[in-house]
Image (cartoon, rainbow, N blue to C red; front, side):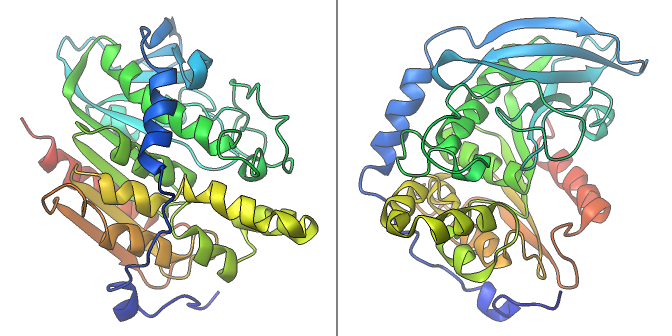
Length: 329
């Protein structure tokens, strides 16, 4: 796929109006207030992953509406130190999988929580373990379309709330330095990490690559791939639902979360990405932190000839080096 979005010089100055609903802040304040107030961790059970250099726990924490959400918690074995920590969010259609699949952050010396995606896990990977009790809300069968007609019913209201509560759960687990917690994600996970950066004011860092839910309106005009294609396909049938869908999507727009974020940020993007068009990532990056009263530390790495994989392992190494510097004692 050749480059199809804006040229790089235009991307570097791309600052679209996200079309924020007037009650964006009160919507999320009410949603998170409803989810909070109780001890976040319901259980943490040690598991034998077959690995000897890390230890893993099967964690259940309170997510949206207090509902149980599963996660894997992994950290260096037999280590008494309170470690800086990473909460990681998985991509669209993927669940938490098996505990030995995501080892990069624990092997780098971090306490690592991998959140399960409620109602997902059936498209690729090794499955998930968290149902979505609200999946019957009006909308299409795919997660990106569930509850699309009303922001209170929308799947991403629940998933973003889970992501915020995952930070609270990680901070409540043993062996975690509560002051040094970073949010990390790619694709849908990148969109969730960015939302967390906008909703958790004391986050220490955020690492976002190929983020979904950024520049949503433009993405729907540019691509039929991936989750945006599911939304477009639904609206192709339900032609009178466009206004309601656009209103709902305004409450989960990543640019709006980015504007409210204050944590140091590291972005990555493939300029030939048709799944999450690069203009969305650049829009979030260019407007990142603008409502926080200062200009946060941030950087972005573009990969001109790559698609949704972006910089892949090369970019992960950049993330490791950057985060080590940001979270250094």
